[in-house]
Length: 413
Image (tube, rainbow, N blue to C red; front, top):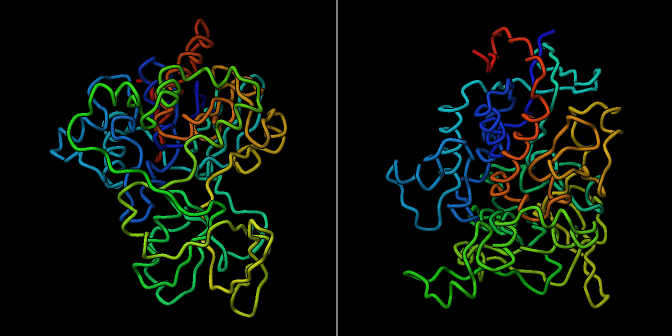
């Protein structure tokens, strides 16, 4: 069985950033996943909501941020910036710096001695001393409990859809008031579906367009810019990413869930406001099949109820990190992981209660705060994990060099 120092599972912004940081430290690793696949599958008209300067693949080499790449390509930075452009950037960085990414699926990881046995979908196996799980949002789509047992032809999540081209004439309820829900509602309306948005808040909300020209000193002092948007709290999360980790669980979880809550970007407003009806102050209390349709029972905030019969419900209800949803972790390994609710409990170095097993991205948010719900968190997480792994491997014998296969090549030359 071949061996590697580190196996990185996931080839999105967090996985690619972690691999780039490992490479810069001369650590032998293998990285698995279809590069930027989650982003590639998004709706065609979806745009980047986070600031362009805070949305990067964090290589150790300077000069390769998204902003610098856009300048090199001659692309405008004017909002809205197509999500497809960031996807193109991520794939370009991967091809230039991390051509060794393997598309074979990781099927199983289990403990073996002081490391891990990794099994791949192509039938090969190898041993890794460390594992970094950087799967992002892929496995964590949240469908509310009254709906999660219903068949897919009645209920889906926004992340399940790359387009709604065949939905004309269907009656659809979109749950949620965040960006993905609003983008889905707009896209459905534009193909001719009969759409309602249902939210627990009184209405849906949108950010204001950025002011034209440079901001005044007073504005910058009042609401400083950050990778999470303007504001002193956002800036503190960017500049001192560790402080939420030092809080007790309860306030950290509240901060992670409630800060930067559901709202839409300014550019989606004209596609939704006055175009798609909003059912405010409601939540789904129950649902049942009614012939070929679905009958929803909506509970109103005043205690009343309302029934609605539709063809489909699209849930824009976010993501919840849950270790048990990661199919590549063996049951025994998953059972060893201590948790905060369903997410892994992590050390300051993003290491779980299983030595050598790290989690970054959405899975780290309940341990580290809201920054890690966003790509910007990779700027801190990726080098922190790589540094910790480098320190733990110092003085140990290097893993045997990998032999190239049809889908793999060693990072060691």
